[in-house]
Length: 74
Image 1 (cartoon, helix red, strand yellow):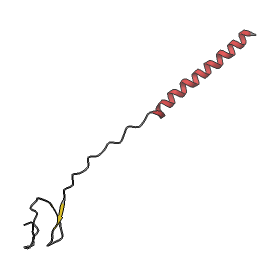
Image 2 (image 1 turned 90 degrees about the vertical axis):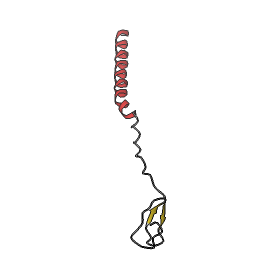
Image 3 (image 1 turned 180 degrees about the vertical axis):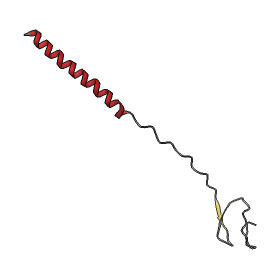
Image 4 (image 1 turned 135 degrees about the horizontal axis):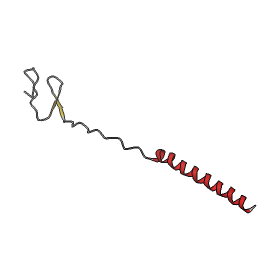
């Protein structure tokens, strides 16, 4: 009688151990954090001024004259 109880308890512990090990294997994939998204380099933005003659925006410090004779950047 005692041997049967020990065999049943051993079987219960073996099944519990197998289920726990199987759960760890499946859960390891789910628990793994995804890699952080790669950050794209932000484009460099230049400060601009609005041309009083034509209304176009021209980067500060450049000579980007329009075709007008009264352009202040030409």
